[in-house]
Image (cartoon, rainbow, N blue to C red; front, top):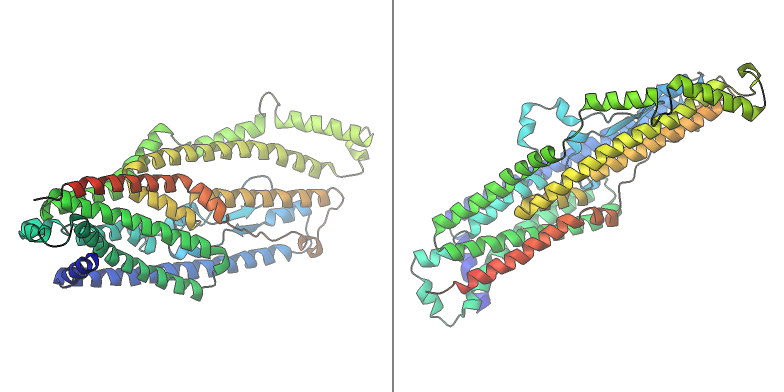
Length: 463
């Protein structure tokens, strides 16, 4: 009986011109989203790989130079484009993807795509993530909003309930019919996106599990929305009222709550401005922390310790150059200041994110967005991990150069070639799952809430 009801509902859904136009429009948007995402990945991935190789080759072939001056020639460390960025590019366009490696100071992430974009960028980038998080929920609501209410409006509910089908058969049959349509669209998206992954140069072995987890999360997210829409249709018994309620949920969940959450998080945990950051770190590096003294005072203490270490009385009697020792010492002390400063920023970001995630209890769209960015490695945690690895590489190069500089005043290409290239590997699947555990928890809460809503609506299915 359930199969019969499913076939009947599917015939009714697909025989209307409204459904034909909606499906046609959605398929066009899916095609555009996949094309945009694939083009984004291919162009960015190729550009970053070529740029990284070019800037590194320039560095290791710079010729004979003073080691410290040569280190200032520097080169860029690029964050490779995530393999699943063709599905969700997350915050990549806002955080930048390159880090300049040179002595003395931690570089600032550069090449933020939004700085070169037009005002149209504020409308968002149409890829699969944008389609899934903004447009697809509305499509689900438009399909399901009258799945039950039409029976009351057409007066067919009595005939339906007096047939051999039980209330349970009717409810499950209608729900499955809606899920069939929704899951068919997800299958189209998932299979096509997978084919593009195969076609691209992305490391399939590294991303396949993340992709499967992402698709699983998408299925759960879509099932929540579909079940909520079916339940609302049954509770309201009016197609117009059902559509108004579901549209309100969509507007609140997709636009109002995320923006409200962002504003609240900024008010509760305000971010430090770049001017305050520069002033604070400059003062701490110049005048020391916890009574360390000024740089001149610390340099004098360092000289005394160095003279004692080599058992000499003057800087001229040292068997090594003192300047690189000074550079290495202040690289370390300034690095601690910068570590504390950036650590405070990351902690503040984590507090803001935690507050936003807590508000996602009112919006599954927000929770799925968080889950999506973590699984595609386009989130802030991955960005901070890249920045940390690049900084560690910068300091490693600094130590190499300073050690060489203590005994040599000139470095040739033979030395520059010993400086290692930067390679970044994003967090593995387990770390991404651990980072998205709160988003997964919120989605599971929505699953439980949806089941309660379904039970409540099921009990109202009577004449």
